[in-house]
Length: 82
Image (tube, rainbow, N blue to C red; front, side, top):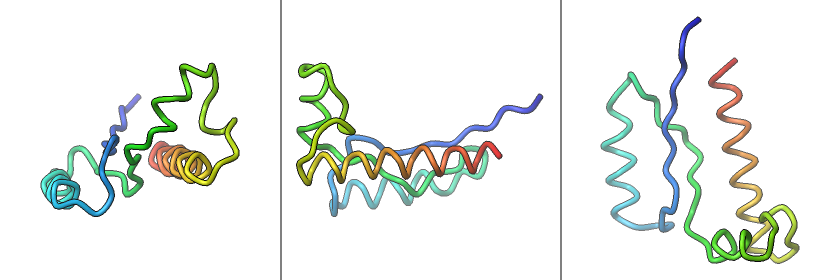
């Protein structure tokens, strides 16, 4: 059985130099592929556990965007495993 590994960035701030530099630095190591999906820092991600919920339970725009990012990450990770 072989092990497959992929890295992803989380708690990233959209549009920052730090995000771009992290993506550039991490994309150079072919042993650990960097997934394209990024999980961005959002208040709803911090609030969800306190409300005994996930972002999939909320209906506001920010939570829907966070849920879409999570779904994209799951889909991309499953493709990597396949």
